Length: 397
Ligand SMILES: *Cc1c(COP(=O)(O)O)cnc(C)c1O
Image (cartoon, rainbow, N blue to C red):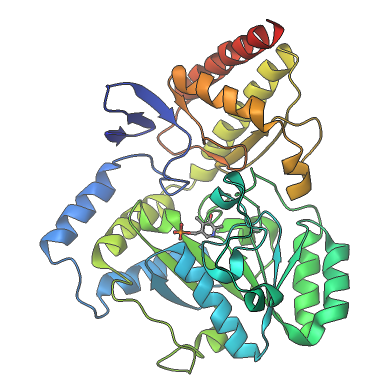
């Protein structure tokens, strides 16, 4: 790709694409959003890194906390991977326990402890259990099926004394888009409370995507720690983790759990993030508009799939959605894996040929931005109509 503008990407040959990947969800306002670009340019003129805190770091932290009140203290990193890795280290240090519970198909970045039954690119490329991750690390990672409260109960009965934390994408966005079943997140909260384990919501993707205050606002379930990334950096490298003040106080230099980063809280990323989050804070109807667009697209796609006799099941919440080539509702990784990925691949290319860029994998979410309008949605549904007609015609040959 050569450049982006609003909801569009342009490749080196000058083709225009409606972008539903949006840097894997980071660009809530679309490409080259003028206030973000301006903020980056201005910050760059004042120096790009100091290795010491800046006012902008406090301002971005306060903006986040104002919309996500469970964040009593926060620390910035340069990626979502570092945020989740550090949050788990903190949970282990705080509880004095070794094991974490994660869910198959959830992706928490590429730190070792998470590359066991991982989603996103690891899943797409067939390496959910990466070589290079030691057996010792695997032993401390308990993997359970997403949306399965009974499995959580059994795991706690067996491993209670070892479980430092449960880490979950509250809406799973890296095996397609799979919302939590009613009661699932509540069950996690209750088991963690009863056992003195911490509940970590990985909202690197869902934060400022499924609602202004993330999945925790949408579901009313409050985690002990939250990890963030993507949207909060306005398209620059960023991550953050935060939550209960008493837990965050265990971090060095206040506490003994070490965490650091030369470029963490980087002034350019802070400036971009402030511009992005100020736009969110100033727009009271933003998330309703985004969800109207997501639903319009989701329903429109479902309609053309049905018209062409192709089975689908779809999901949406806030600015995220997914169409599975699947006959059943997807609740977990096993369900996602029953999707027809060969058909998805053909659909991806047919859409790309028609100027629509969706993720090149069934196991990713689609994102809409504040820059998308009903015009782009209609164009997308028309392209899907043609693409599916082509798939059906080729299959019949
Ligand atoms: C993208 C993502 C990460 C990793 O963030 P990076 O910035 O790519 O390191 C972690 N968790 C979730 C849920 C993500 O979607």
